[in-house]
Length: 110
Length: 280
Image 1: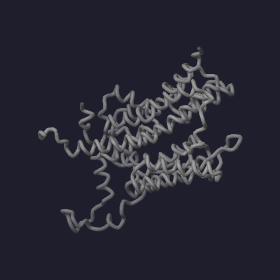
Image 2: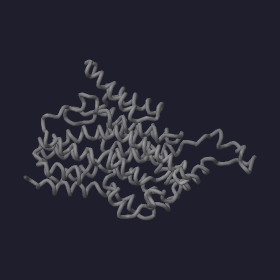
Image 3: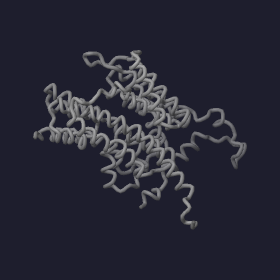
Image 4: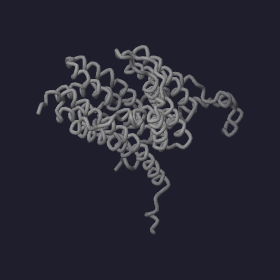
């Protein structure tokens, strides 16, 4: 059984781990000024919203270029977000969002 | 029942929060498993052996770059550009790491080394929302999010995918392709508890989408995550209240800068000691 690509996995780990670890392992993070801590607190909602929006609204052309995409996925994501805002229950929100999209696709609407 | 058997309100709150975290984790785990199956299949189609596929999921443990690598290997691309691409695809993890770092500072260094490796989009989203709800660090909560929610389902599904091959249906048929963005959006809502967080999230979404169209999602998402907070910080907490005298202040009649007060309380928020679970 081939194990050649295990080395590539190790190299990819070496390219990924510093991003994940440096701030957590670096000393002195507790001495950051309050404004820097506020900035870091706001990174969470900003980057998660950025991920959600880009994953929903940006598709790819056949040659891999990014393109603005409007599809049924928006309905599912918005439904989930609204349910979470209303009920504070992520699982319920995901079930509603997935059910909406699956139903639309089975019905041939998307 | 003895008095010592009665859980304290803090312990009961923690149990409630962990129960909610587990429920949230369940939704994420289903999606992670579905795409782990697809990665296993993609790796098999790209010529990976089961050992190589599992090595990717355990050692790299980063879905987007794993999928990209499988595609590039299938296309015969050399390793160097794959490694460079991996760096850019996963650079956003630095934002997560920086965001969690103030809470992790009391965690033993050896434990932080392992915690860093399992820091993914989903682990960050679940644990940040959990910490935000309880107002402090909860190390077991982090492991629930990162290991139970992501690492275990991703790796089991990878093995299943590489072994089962073509018997796997396309997750998008069942709408599971929206679970990832929907979960990220839902967890962002959980973190957006004030005006500044809301503005940061809105700006992050708009900038992230716009920049993804211009420079691609790998970097566009990072730009959204970096610039969103700047807009949040520029938002006054509550302009009408911040400029008015604080009626319940001991210094009634003297204007109180609530923005500064929030910063002070934030500094205190990050200066808490380790919780009882962490001290164990």
